[in-house]
Length: 265
Ligand code: ADE
Image (cartoon, rainbow, N blue to C red; front, side, top):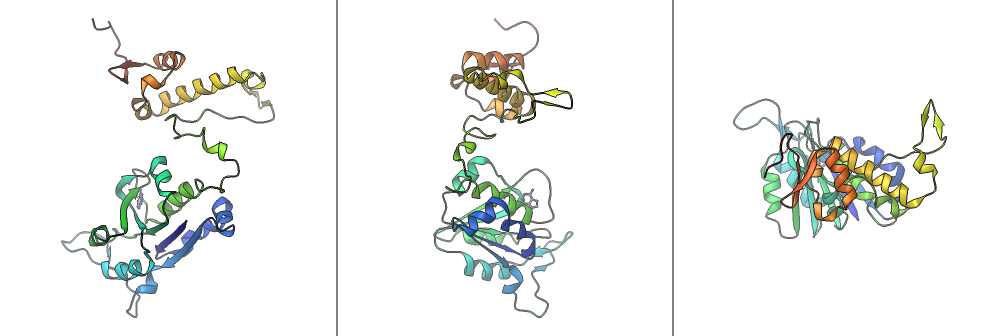
């Protein structure tokens, strides 16, 4: 896979030389190129922004500078990604889809964002897909950190990047739709806290059940939005007992919060 990042702060992307992403680059699995947007400016001051039409605070990034940069960087079949707090939420499913692309181009905006015509223009380009994405409901100073997040989430899914592909199977936000169970290692006692007995039992069936219970309990406690998306028909009886203890019951093909008081007849 090839990833191009365009930013006015290319140094912000320096961490991409480290860890698994860095290794993926040196091993040739990932070809990653970081560009300075100002290299496409033509004026003495290397200007990338201007005041917003219609008034208001802050500055907006100019479409002409972005246009020349993106025309140079986008290859046929590219997916143009624009990080913005007003984009669609980035999820593990998005990362999985993007891991199958040939080229990702990430256009990092600063200030009040990039002139809206840029995304509109490239949406009309044959052979280019455009997605505006958000990494969460908070506002960053620019798209660079969101680009780092996206690249790490995608790169670890490329074959050969994570040493043991099995570690991708059971993690949070995986196919099960549950948060991951808690994990422990040596020593078995630490600061008065013991590793749960069952994990030392060597009994694989019991360990698996305990881990699933923990995953269900954590998900129920922390992410009711994920519980609402579970398919009750894909859960076993024990799963339903655990969820019922947290106030979730199957109704009409989905899980709903049990209402206190007398059951309806
Ligand atoms: N740029 C600024 N805030 C952002 C966010 N939450 N997600 C993606 N890009 C951003």
